Image (cartoon, rainbow, N blue to C red; front, side, top):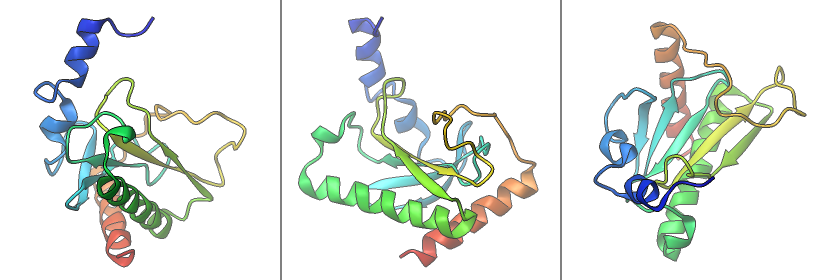
Length: 154
């Protein structure tokens, strides 16, 4: 069963939105800030079961692609594409999946989800694989590599 009307109202309320509250922070419970643009924030996810797993979060609290005007839509997808290029440069995946969902966290964001040679291509994509939390030094190296990839993809 879907969220009740009251639950959904709370989830879509920008005053209660977790992404609005912490996507701008250098680090939060779920991810680390890699880059920011006028439209989005690009964050490396702490769960690195798929090396390079990143999210691109719209700065403005909107819940669906249909709410974006043409300029916003173009800027969002341009940043998603650049994040994908950065992940490709830094982590050399075989393929990158791009997932826009939001039924649990209805703040527009895109999961940039790399698939590597060791991954089973017949397995359904599951963003909760793992979790695999890297030691601090490895996580720092991944963040640095992604930042370099981001700069190189400008």
